[in-house]
Image (cartoon, rainbow, N blue to C red; front, side):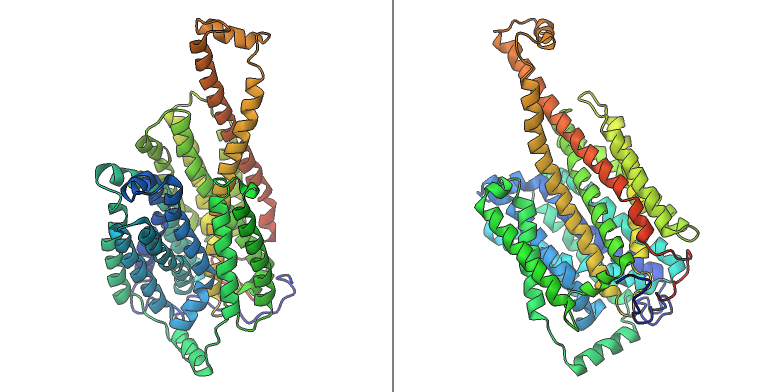
Length: 531
């Protein structure tokens, strides 16, 4: 069903105050308050990565067992994300949001005190559940609090927290772990969480329209879609395990991964069928019938795919190929965070005069240019070149995140922002998981491919091989010279595999440019009419 033929309920006139959470406060104070918890939660998705070895050693666990510290968080986060819109509607957005902040903060402290790996994983599950409800609640709050002409700037402020946090996380996590202990990567959430709770209590106000909607819902009787919830938990939970453990377990060569794939595929197909037939679905999949909203989700998936994969790849590349320390590798992507901070407000301002889909198309073109530039990296690359490539890529992300977040809410029926936010944020997170998983798989497989080709040239009949031996002062049977050449071959194979991934991301970015034509054309800065 297209946007042109569908006849949904009349869209909400956002910004009229009926659903604003600002109350008597300045709306920008609401944006600032919710961005605090956003930064804290998104930061935690990446900050623990660099501390895994320390955690494993401290808790007498193997490196493979320690990875469940990451997987457990991502699984519970993925399960809560799509149902957070329903939960916010049933329990009240402010109440649900503050409960999520409280759960996230308390479980963070518990993680820091965890006496064993088992307890740490349990507390990480609770932490991921609390974090899963934050981003959708925050984004829907901004959509309801700000009128269309200011919504772009509000999403820009929120976007800074979402995009900068993954870049800062590894660097901050490494510094804390090296100078203090891994426990403090969790303890630092306590003061941030307490400040967020205090400000939320005094600043956020439950709007009358939302309160009346919730009261009507409870008087009528809350019907819990238990089947839908079970399918969400089973489908997305196993999907996240599949993506996180696939490369480590040799993908479909592992019975465990095959089992996860079958369970996830069946559960997700059943979820779609079930939710589309419900009058009160726990995940509002009928919103996907709107072509513009569906396209927004696809593009937000791509943003997560590109952002999270490159955030992991670039530090990994400079450490493996260029020999950077962990701290220096983190600093390579830090300038990109500053680029986002600079460009987000610019994009928010441009949304007042420029079509969102025009900005999105430009953003994907910038991403394509940045990815193409990275395909020219070599094993002698200097710090500034890599940093500037990241800056260009980060600037492109700014032109994607804010306009996509803005256009996704165009023409939605009144009261649907909670559900829309849940789906948009789920798309970004799942996109990130797919991006990281594909990047690591390609890295391993393409390294083997390039190594087999390069090794085939190490024969007495290859002039390049003989020249290399001569350059290192060795002969065909010289073990020291051959060891040097072997290391260079391994390094070159690894470098070529990174370039292959950047080529793929370049093609993906280009292919998404035409998709912007599906997005609804609206008058910049004004609420659209119904479809």
